[in-house]
Amino acid sequence: MAQPDTPSRLVETPTAYFLTFSCYGTRLHGDARGTVDRFANAPGTTVLATSGRRECFEQYLLKHRPIALNACQRGLVLSAIRRHCEVREWRLYAAHVRTNHVHVVLWVDVQPEDAMAQLKRYASRALNQSVGKNGRWWARHGSTRYLWNERQIAEAVSYVAHEQGAPMALYLN
Image (tube, rainbow, N blue to C red; front, top):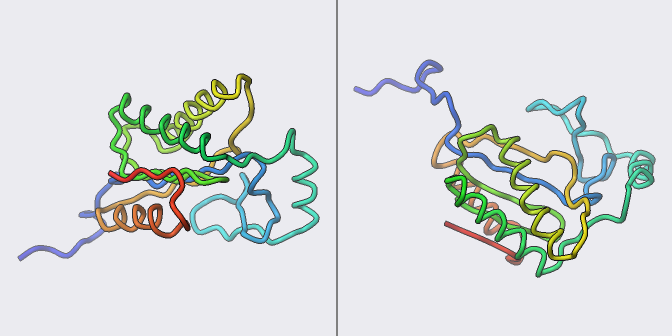
């Protein structure tokens, strides 16, 4: 008879990751959607309180206008993500590039923060080449969720594919 899952029998490494990163200037601390900052970003930490004053201050600190990706730019970002995953031999389950953020569900052989940084770097390179200049496209860091089993992967893929509104630049494997 199979033993029930106990802490000693649980998987020790994630099966995949659900990464989300936002375009520069589109998700500021203090806005009503809630954010975390570098001082309060541990799992289970409550989001920062809504604060119009802080949001205004964050807007003041922006180096340039917030980024909104057009259809061509979303396609470039998706192509860069797919190409990088292929080169690195990472398994890409799903990716959805929206106007102001990107969702990616994938398996990688590096830390998820490193994978996110690489994806942002390659997407930035593609965008910079398309506009002929260097720019800051992404907000600092993003969200990294660990997916421990196939059910969690399927739920993340479903969220990416079906719960974001009309598909924009979408990849499903």
